[in-house]
Amino acid sequence: MKFAHLADTHLGYRQYGLFDRETDFYNVFNNIIDKIIEERPDFVIHSGDLFEFSRPPTTALLKVQQGLLALKEADIPVFAIAGNHDIIMRKNAIPPHVLFRELGLKVISPNNPYFIKDDIFIGGTPHVSKHQSTYLSETLKELDQISKKYDKRVLVLHQGIDKYLPFEYELELADIPESFHYYAMGHIHTRITDDFGEGKLVYPGSTEIWKSDELASYKAKGKGFYMVDMGGDEPEIEPINMEMGREFIRENIYYPEIQIEIEKLKNYISTLKQKPLLNLTVEGGNFNRSEVFEELNNAFSDICLSIRPNFKSQSLQEAEEMLKDAGAINPRKLLVERLNEFEDPKITELGLSLLNEMSEGKTDNAEEITKKFYGEYYDH
Ligand SMILES: [Mn+2]
Image (cartoon, rainbow, N blue to C red; front, side):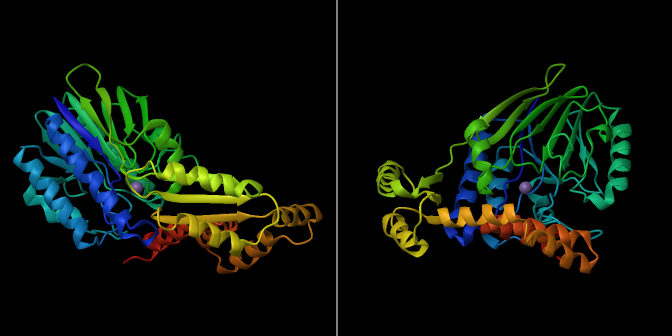
């Protein structure tokens, strides 16, 4: 008895507003469906964030329809939960997943908290916010009770756990029942496999680079999905790596050597099959930002999909150091004072994280944080 486990496909996400990036996410999804059919599992589990939004673009819906149709023809059912991205934070909210029930998508929800497939218990809950932690622990207790009637038990969740996500978790490891054989997790975009209770706890990770800081873990651990064999006493897991067509280049360039660095990068980029995404930080020495910006644009605009430069000239670095030493102005302290006037810790937290990201020039991170904030608290 084998199944495929994936999560965080984020279909419909248009990174940096680029149509090609939206297509990249679709392409890897298509490739995964083909690979799953080749692997011939008995079923598939998708642990949430199938879509980027609770109201996905039509193309994203179409890609899922085509994928599910192919799996249905291969007689492979799919069990899924909604993640924090594809659910509206409202009671009795309906995720877009329900559109595909006729195509063999079994939606695990408060109304249908579990399914039995060939004597395997597959149960869970859609993403639950930190404010509903009591509901979450009660649901877990109920699932634990019901599942005990079955020999093989799989728990499907889309949550951050304190052990792996210490600053943003909704669930503590201690609150998870230990009686399941496989914990099919979603939410954390890095691949994680761990021993837990009687079995394995697995985050398959996102299938594409959703945020540029996922690059390091992608290089170290790869991206893709897992094949899980439930035949033995303990599940056996095998990572299946998917090739990503497009490269993400993140480099620091020392300004005095900018010409040499540009040539090196151009040579490297000429070896790539697809235009890469280029994330450059120019630092050291005194330089004129707009001149360097133009220089980078001239060098790379035709051969890269996008160029995102950050600049840190010596004078700026020195000024920052001086301010720190003098302790005269503390923008962070001033900001917190003003934000506290809203009397809402969520807003203070939002303001501070935006300050952090934007003072490092990470505008894409700031954009994600803002979207997520509005998605969680104001998307009705
Ligand atoms: Mn996600």
